[in-house]
Length: 387
Ligand SMILES: Cc1ncc(COP(=O)(O)O)c(C=O)c1O
Image (tube, rainbow, N blue to C red; front, top):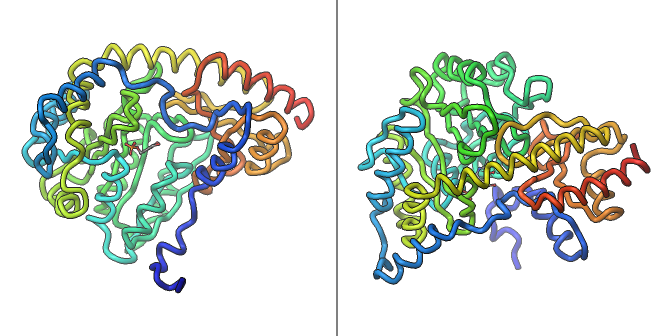
């Protein structure tokens, strides 16, 4: 086939470092995977029932382009109660196919060709790609463990050029587990204001925090008007397969996202929207139970990795530990490959998450406690040989 059929920006897009690795894992036996970026829990049963009931009740049609008004209303109530934010359900909340679609819409709606988006890394693997697909240029801003993997204000300011349009942040963070402090976010806010930048804030893991409070970025003074807030159901409610997320922001910005969404998606899946309504109505105790279990695993894996000589930052959110592996003398890709080959434990090389992730691996603790114990035994044997 003529290779030029595909657009250059598609051909030049790097395949996700995660997928490449997990295609190999899928062919192997007896692997303990700490590589999974989704809850091991199935969706709580009452939420599943709500989806089934909506189908039986004949809710099998398109919804409004914005999504069901009841869902927008209930998301708006949630943002008000949790963070004191006010978004009008009629035109400031858009229901999307996961945060994935919301990210795509946000980037496509705001970027002219060549405009830059500053992205603190390590970060979720899609951020850079979404910027490129929208015709923009991702500018990576490495963060460091000694700063709790939060952006250094002076580095952030130094990365700004006349082409900078936005800053894309994601806390609680995938892959580090960092939760941004109010102080760190206020620094980002100050710089955004000074340089008149937009901020896209991916807060998909907002309810998965351990002993600290999540700060909703647009709740900071002056930030609502320049922020597109992204949130969803995949992680908090163990609903990755339902594919529901949302974008909230000032009407003028959300209008831009809806313009693209109406021609590409039309409306998010109706059954899944019914499930999301139930999640917000009755999901809280289920989220709490899952959060408590994640916390138990978090304590096990973080202390376990540190004891094995792999220095591990204490993650305060999401469900990832991010140990440094430089002590082994290997780079992160070699470490992950050898650990898989020799001990059948799958972790994700940190460099898959951008330049700031080099020298680390991501270990997800969204897997059973006993499996994490066994993985730690295997890593112990590995470290005896390579530590
Ligand atoms: C930080 C972050 N944002 C967005 C996503 C995509 O989530 P969704 O299932 O809502 O599309 C993920 C999934 O791993 C993620 O970790």
